[in-house]
Length: 463
View (tube, rainbow, N blue to C red):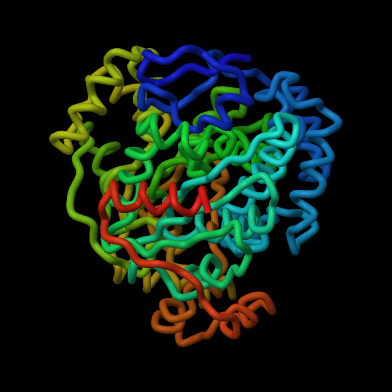
């Protein structure tokens, strides 16, 4: 299987190169040249199988033999053996047709673990075979950094530099990064927003001198392996609710759009997905896009759901590429213009294609708080603010004609202040979270300046 750039100016590559390069040389994102297909029989056969087995089957469709299937199966067993729940992604019911997929049972208590734990093992396997060492540079709005540090710390073939916006993530999110003491980990508090951090990472990837000097790679959701791993839980949750014999809808709290795009990818592979509700907080660029057909950046507002405080959703480029019929020239034009003006007016035909699958809705801060209270009172479930944004959006969406899975992206213990402020309840703190508070933190501070960060990355890698 080959992977092509959304901007059409980079040569096609195989799975291994797409993983290690992360971002295509032309600034585009990699997508499969053709989406692999699963038959209804193959999807139905996932019922009752351990999560790791389904993961090996789904991800294996994207590796296409570049990773031996037996090795991939062992990696999946190891990766999902780190989760505290035997089902890995269990479902709980919150309404007659509404369910929560608990994606937070991994080591850093966030959905990013589902992809990051297998990604770390893929990197180990690939880099060991190539006798190669890489520097991973990631930007985080809260959870990616913690999941990356947890997955890669102490590994001999990888160094990790995690950028986070100072003062814009929760203390627990920060400590999942900064409490790591391993020498292959560096954390940087950037004086800016997540969008600033993300823009710096993209600039670093397009700096060919830096890439050659430190062999840079990325584990943000710009890396297609992250998308491949996230597709898995769309299949497992949908099958648990009757797919492929009936469609299932999803409601996704979204910032960088990778999680929602994984649902689109699952549909392209044959899963009967009714609708995907893209739920945002006050940073509603995606909600407005799916309502109005205009992708327009605004100012970033700080909210109680900080992982969604984003006004430039990287993975939207992948959807745009698909909906303009894979026209790389048009995609490159649109996103280069977006970088300069902050606006893309989506062509009518592409917007119609997006609306066939996606609904965009936002939730205010007060709606998010009220939803945490209502969910606790009505179901006994204590949910975090990001999940609450999704439940609030689902309440606005009305009848979707199918059972709905809300993706619960973080454990409430990652946001104890927000949960307590809304509900009066303090979430149960897993033992790992309590231990974090006793560990010393280690991080550096830098301005939101690409040159400063690139110099830091190079010095860290060379040291």
